[in-house]
Amino acid sequence: MNFKKLFVLISVLAIALTGNIASSLAKTYNITVKSGRTHELVRFSVFNQSDCGAAAYPKFKIFQPAHGTLTVKKFRGKLTVKGHCRGKLAKGMSVSYKSKRGYRGADSGKVNFNFFRSDDGDQIIVNQVKFKLRVK
Image (cartoon, rainbow, N blue to C red; front, side):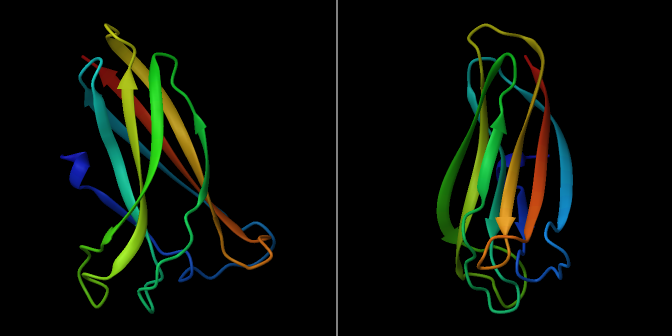
């Protein structure tokens, strides 16, 4: 599977929440990468599915792997999803990995993204993205 073309669509405003802290979503990716090169592991867009409006960039915390570095970058681009939002401008983020020079073997790391639903910031969705990497 080509992870450069993978889009994880997160619709913050379309999820009904109750209580102060909403929910936690987790996804684990098993990916093989080449040593010493930067690889985009995952990319996602953040938008409201009902009106296709761009949502705010989430806050994030990176838990670095032992043998490399995870990097999170923000971007803006047109949505490629099917339906009425296709072609609309949205915000997005991507996660990349680069191993230490010459390292080969297993590595792992994760990024937690916090999506704030309400104006006062008390309702959040925590999306945890874990990476199990095989560095060749």
